[in-house]
Image (cartoon, rainbow, N blue to C red; front, side):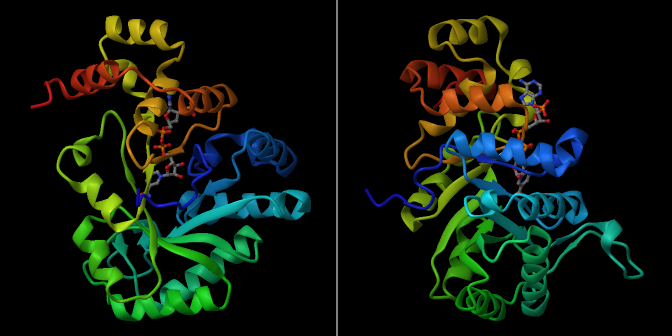
Length: 292
Ligand SMILES: NC(=O)c1ccc[n+]([C@@H]2O[C@H](COP(=O)([O-])OP(=O)(O)OC[C@H]3O[C@@H](n4cnc5c(N)ncnc54)[C@H](OP(=O)(O)O)[C@@H]3O)[C@@H](O)[C@H]2O)c1
């Protein structure tokens, strides 16, 4: 098997995009306890981006690590850059846009390091494919950051195969992952060859919105969901994660819920194999059509 070994031991990655929705967790002592619980569960990789909370999610996480240096040695972080939301555009045009210039990315890496208070970011991702991307100069900037020890690995996010292949041609560094949407509700890539392109090129799929934002209870008919729960002893969270982890190459779910109950259920799902027919029954129910 030539599947990517990147983050092989990680059943899931807690995503930090919704941190500000949880006022109680924004206090360093509470967040430190929450992080410690994840470490106890074997989860040591946390997903960030410069735009989450306009940098506040990284800042609060970093403040927590500073206040609890024992955690700092144990956690590793993923971060990303390249999206400028409209409200952060200082120009006359106030337009959401992408930035992938070399100096912009070098600055973004430094700013993430300083907000997160870590010496190295485990994996840094280009958040979105940018039609104005100068692949050669961005690759050089990322290589410099790796040589300087600021980041360990590079990856992409929301890229299609030809987009990452174009970028990969410009650098000797291996792209280790593509963080893209994948779930029972967002499964087209499993049927059109896009998923296999990841396996062929050795990019681990980090699946964002793996719980489909909690919409599965609406997408799967109640009778099927109930029967699936009884058969597997999982709830809808566990079923969504088990379904993803069963795919060859085991995509890593980047889970957005920060609630203990859902994370524990997600972990239970990551350790469960669904009967093959149930895997397809869930897919069929959400797609509202049989596989061809
Ligand atoms: N690279 C990218 O472009 C990109 C884009 C988006 C996200 N991400 C990353 O992926 C992570 C996950 O994204 P996500 O938050 O959209 O994923 P998600 O895990 O699919 O959704 C989490 C949301 O769904 C709710 N939810 C889950 N199960 C539910 C249920 N059974 N009933 C009611 N609500 C339920 C959660 O509510 P509760 O909080 O109440 O549990 C939370 O609001 C983010 O934190 C971020 O790190 C990356």
